[in-house]
Amino acid sequence: MRHEQQDRVSLSRVRKALASVSRRIALLHLAYAKAIIKELGRERGTRVISEALKDYAAKIGEKTKQEVMAKGLEPTPENFGQGDSYTLPDIPGMHSGQEVVEDEGGKQFRAYDCILAEVWREYGEDELGRLYCYMDTAKFMGYNPNYKFVHLKAKPDGDEYCAFKITSTTEQERSDFATEGKEWFYMDNLNPSRE
Image (cartoon, rainbow, N blue to C red; front, side, top):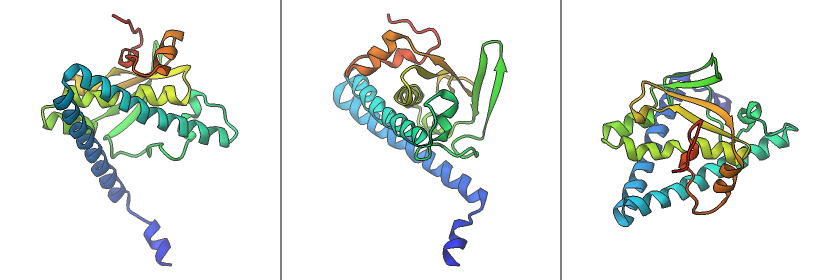
């Protein structure tokens, strides 16, 4: 009986716990990123952060793919949420709410009041915090390299909310992503250009 009671937690407590974990993730990212850049300088430090984020996010994507395929499903964009280990709950906590909006370009995913972005803003570190957001592109490419999840808007960039879109990757993007040390942040864009 005691175990059953522990399984019943109010939605309010779950939201608070998710918000707390989100704030901790934001601070952890910020602490590591600041230490790396302090030690290596902005350019080299950003490259190291980029590789760490790619490794972290690709592992999330790869595990998600394994779980999706274990359920007999194909690793398509529509099935991404079928993974169990790293799928975020569809409840407010990391943000105040989310929605899918259809526009002339197709589906757009929106998330409002990102707690991570609020923490980075509180510390005056929007730009450094924003690096973490690139993991959205990398986790999707780790799941299926033919697709990426790109930011149309991002709260750390000064936008009112975060907006995302799933789009196909190019051969060049897949190659760059698979190559260690290759710059890949440019992929977080619907129409990336490599300058």
